[in-house]
Image (cartoon, rainbow, N blue to C red):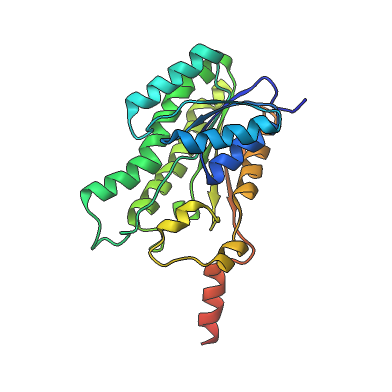
Length: 254
């Protein structure tokens, strides 16, 4: 029996990358996992992986950038399971046009809604369920760009991910008295499909040196399994071969 047996976990962006890895890891610990993303086919692949390993999973597809869609999914979770013990706020996106000179109001809105608004909507949707139980944990995927503004990630992404960090800390400020914990995970470079949206292509060799989705998924599992009296407020996870550090060393030798 896993340490999360009997728990219900809602994982967003669960069709690939970190979300998929986190969903699989939580299911292996015994949680019933509800998977959300915009496309059903990738979610079905995640379900198949979980069920092959003997786990339990359910699909609630939807566009989390729309508040009404989030409300619908949260109500479906509460109706079917009566609870949501774990929220993994992982859904996110980026765009190729990452410079101010190329940003438009529409493209900025897409990035901010995809990374920050969606996380806010999901958080507000699950907190009432958690308050009823006087227990619950929210784990949000931010980025190192959420601590250090990055031209590589772009202004919209950096701003949105900074917002996710601030959001998580304010949850703890208010909800700690309700037994609710919020943790924000800040990965460095991770070899996920979002790299395909980089303006400068990332090679296969470079991806191999990065953190992998399973590394971050296992960290999320660890945080979710901690006892209720412990809160990991914020945690960084980066590859040992940190390309930013390496570039700085090379510049120092020039």
